[in-house]
Image 1 (cartoon, rainbow, N blue to C red):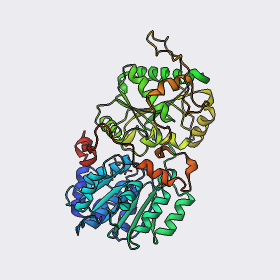
Image 2 (image 1 turned 45 degrees about the vertical axis):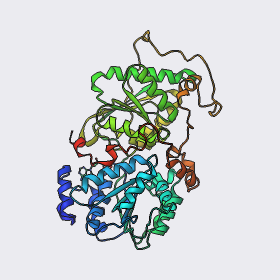
Image 3 (image 1 turned 90 degrees about the vertical axis):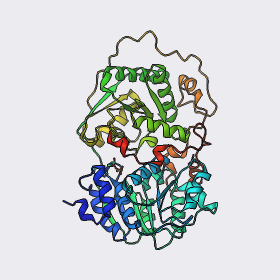
Image 4 (image 1 turned 180 degrees about the vertical axis):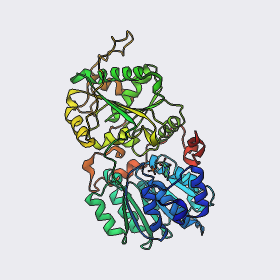
Length: 470
Ligand code: AMP
């Protein structure tokens, strides 16, 4: 079996890995690190949770350890599809590069250009960015990419889903032809194959088995509750609270997944109203709010994170005791991703899903994918509490939402969220093929920052090891 010490990583990197508690490289690390250190292009087919971030960060740190960056001329680039993922790469970099003098900057939307300009001006070894923000800086003439020696594209399949492919192509074109490319994707759609054929030079291809089954440490249950039409959403919220209450103290913390952002807001609001500690996270929310929410959840200060798939996928959040699927996911693979947030690293976890008759087909699709029947849970609830949610009597309709997918109570409760429902972070799959890239970039710039303003939260700027130690 390969050991980290066999991989020719710099001693300072080995020391940091040792402190992080890693004993041996994961398969993607064992496969990708040696060719990366030889200067070869790498095509890694792996998804989150396989240790792929370290598989490109560790060789990068080793390769860049000699030399220094000049002002405005980063020596390496890491492109990630969402701000959270970019921030997560930055945290990983801080952990693994702690014994080196390498510098990094994180360029993401929702943070002021001024602050980012200052960092770039000082000269950075590693620039971690979302594609839109990177191009914005480049087009403003603030960034010179002619010194980029290593470029990483992380989660390329997500880039494709989000319409970022034209931006990625452009970034490939404005970086030196001689750069080394480390390219990661969970799947190889034809569009991605096309990019890798065009821009990668004889890459070493490493494929890590795709996760098609859930970890055995996760107990799964599905609750098939009756219901159709207007009252379904309320029934589901009642039932969700019933599940949470029935689990009692076993729920140390949990992620509640909804299919639509509007429901993320409604469910979070409803839980709060009933005395639960819950916050929403999805692509339409202000960046500083998202960052604070995640930080609180990771620190154990927030008990429930109500999330959409895109906001939560790929986030490394250890120790989640429960995953609640408020909705049956529309894509079967999302079920595996969602429940994979619990039962990590051999710990036990519980995944509970609420299903209604209209979800039967989706449920069957999931069971076909995981090749197992999900045990049915007891759906009898105690008599409703007297202080049930206020009946949402006023069927008020918003002009911007379709009649089909909005029950009156959803509209009434969704009033707080006046932002458009669609953002690039949750762009529908039809955007494949790259159209809408411009839109994607606009959204990537993020909403105007309020609240924390230009403050860069510590969790983005500093290492995470103290928190991880807990
Ligand atoms: P990633 O796939 O990069 O999101 O990594 C998933 C998780 O695995 C992160 O929490 C890493 O800290 C952790 N990890 C990465 N490499 C190793 C390793 N060799 N041994 C143990 N944990 C690791």
